[in-house]
Image 1 (cartoon, one colour):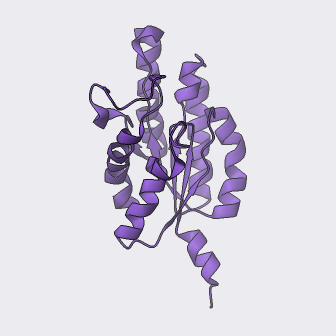
Image 2 (cartoon, rainbow, N blue to C red; image 1 turned 120 degrees about the horizontal axis):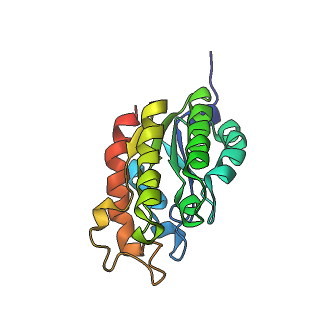
Length: 192
């Protein structure tokens, strides 16, 4: 059986499904962690392409609604889901976020892709009950659906000084290589 090169490339893609953090809002897209991931793959001579399907402002509901067409189009080997931050900032129910994330993992697995789920945390002003429930949601969903988990994308940023744009939410250009390194540690074992 002969397989067309385009089909081979499609089978070896990494689909990044995120929000403004992965869409590199406020910095040059070529300097965002997703673009840096593409460079890292080339440097390491790993035959994967990266498709950044991240949308600023995206919620888990929006992501769940638009994932299937992206899976059909790109046929990724790995899906990186970096969604949930906007759900939290809008105070949306954690149970709905968990359902949406779970649905996205199931859709990805059914399409033959492994999943790396990236967690987020909320600022303390949302209250301990909500912030705790929100943070636990990612590990609970990853465990329930057997996905690989990066618990908190900004963990490597320490106290955050100098690593965020003036809005205090979006990472600066200097934060991107650190974020990539965190993602890489979890992603690399998923790459054949």
